[in-house]
Length: 413
Ligand SMILES: *Cc1c(COP(=O)(O)O)cnc(C)c1O
Image (cartoon, rainbow, N blue to C red; front, side, top):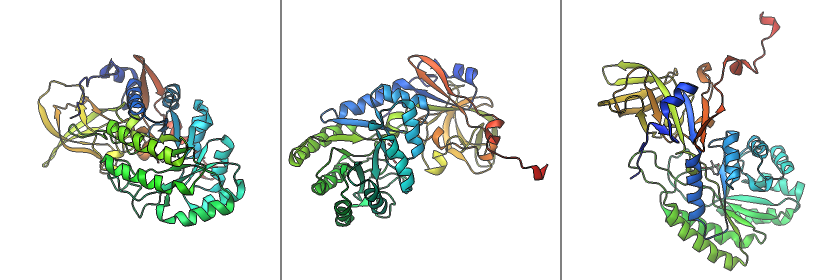
């Protein structure tokens, strides 16, 4: 059982109310110490092999967070050329950046080659064009879909047979022909089965499938097992047992390396595991609205700032940080957007009053990065707590940000 809010009213030692007074709300706050704790936990769990951890920056892409991960020794997993550029700007050695796009053009991949990052290709058509252009001069990793269902929401599962991700394990012969004819040097194999490893043995089965196809690829330097590390969102949630996975996977991996005849690197690219728990989203309650069915707490935010509950039906634990000792009552927490943007039904919170600050826990991953300006709302500010100190790492937007790229044409004056 995971404990939430053992110190709910402080983040990284700083009182939440002080942060809201200083920076306003809504506000994202990230505790760097928790990112480091998570990174070290993975690092230690897989210390039995030559393991490299690449932070999947689509989960949280503030440049300070990227720099922080670079400083503690992580690499970077990117899914767009823009993320590659962000990584280079943050100071990552391009060799430590992997670029794992899906359905992008060869032109975009060429830009990534120019940056010197590790390319990962997930379809045969582009791989063939890539080989035609670069032959064996630029090594490439290929993304394999082992079709092992790792569980979780269908929108985040990528391993199923209908998934658009990866080159099917059933297309090995075709893949091999393309590699041979274009003299492509495949230096890595990659899989990313989905977002939740519910069962360590299911994950190991997918790994075994990758090991089995390695005899088609004599030039491997690494195998990238993607991500899928689950973190607890509900008070009684479990998380992926990374220590058990670490023991089992490093052992089978090392056996595999012996058979393969060379020591390869073992890569992972977690997003959520590294940053989800570090983040808290804070928003003020605008209105308490009693209806015939429920009591709504309407907050000064919505799906424009935190869309996971509406998009993935995901649970975020919510606490009332302004009234910790209040009587427990039931509320339905909703946003101010003109859509049905419900954060949670029938949540027990200590009595909520207009003006109170609610904390949405585990909001570090896919929180800010999925935010938008829908309803012409400003995106929130971001604060990072680093070594006991709070830093503003993104300022709140203004109307100028909304209008920045709009062009007011003369004809309408
Ligand atoms: C999104 C993504 C990840 C990170 O997934 P998490 O569930 O956040 O750990 C890793 N690899 C690839 C290729 C991804 O697209």
